[in-house]
Image (cartoon, rainbow, N blue to C red):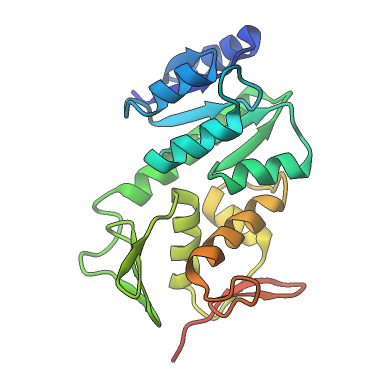
Length: 232
């Protein structure tokens, strides 16, 4: 049974999330403040974290930042803050998805299932061939081991960034729109905000590109999408 940590100080919303998740076979724990959520989130007991932004003691953004330094489990931000800047901030700190309140409980459960499924596939030892590796100039990607090296030095990637990178690297020199990347990686048939893909691409560039503002590896094809350039 997958365990979900619900970091939410609104009792009514937390219990709604808990009830729907437990009806669908998940085990849950509610943390009503940021400090408790941090301690629980770092315990290694949970398979996914639902994270509200407006939490007492430690707010959701800082909580996300600290959690992402220690764990790569999916983090879904569920919050009434719906402005693009707020979404970008959460994604930039390592959140995998952003679900605005009020939400459809059935959609929330579907998002949780989707992220858990993709995380399990990504981290499965059988998820790729034994000797699988991808080389892009000084960069080496090991999909099986969830590892990326640049000039021999390992670079850490949260799961969504890693999965986008691996997908683009497996389809070099091909352009994918934001919509296509969202559907391929998130497995959800629509985009709630194009910033989701854009922010993740930006974070990948910051880690891999010599000049992130003038990218050579993951190029923006204006009006079309993104392309990973594989040197011949």
